[in-house]
Image 1: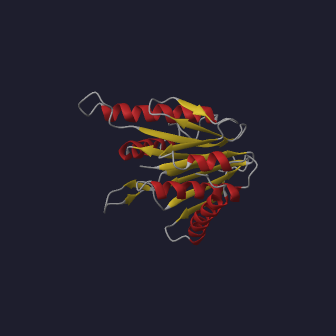
Image 2: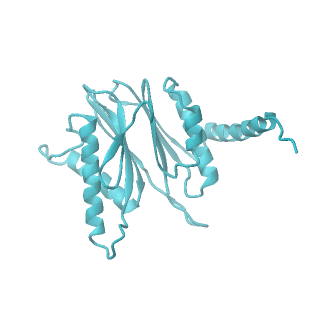
Image 3: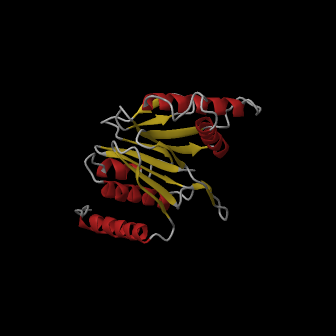
Length: 243
């Protein structure tokens, strides 16, 4: 399982993903789920993946290959003129990978599925973000829906809904995401550290901040413990139910 979140702020974008890809009683593995493509001064594109690992790795490999090989290779994520066209390319590539993979298995049930969050900015356009579905179609972030989640979404969503503010700082947005991820980790064994964080400031066309939060990260542990204490104190302060 996976948990990835992308937030749109008034001054940029924030992305955060876990790295766990398999979980069991004594079997844990992890891999990177957050990827970037950058052309200095012209574009910054970030992509996060959830779903079948073979599918997501094939998607990233194809996008990477088509952006780094022959100069006239087309289409390429580094030459699309707008973020909308980038989302279309990612959707078409994802659909291509899934169709190819499903053709090799028996049965009618599709076995290779994935969902993607892709966001960033290309010069001449605004920073934005899209959720891309296995079928290749996608939706764009809006004022009414200012963040996207993929993977194990239900445990961390209430935190985001109640705490999100489009004017919040990058620092506060990362803190909010850490609380959301902590709530998910404590509720589902299939989501876990390390976490990858990336912050993008509007019109910078480069990464503002990138960090991997390890299991022993002191700030994360302090936030996790502090949130637990704050919840207990808030619960105790509520009026009692009379019987």
